[in-house]
Length: 105
Image (cartoon, rainbow, N blue to C red):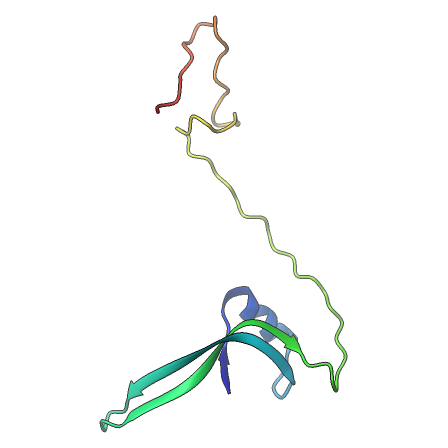
């Protein structure tokens, strides 16, 4: 059966398995339908993989975790609820020169 997987799952699968490897796949069945240039109707079932694992009946596996960089979280410079950063100084305390800005409601 044809299977498809995307993003990190596809990358890990490509690095971990070789052609002919026995696998266990969990996912959803999808039907692809199309028409040939001659007008014939065709269809096929495709398994969209959510998880892929090696079948352990005839093989052993050593598991290694993949490392991913942490996503960069940026705060909008005009976000009144954000904490102070090097690009956005803290709001001055009451009684200092600059007035305290309250967030819009």
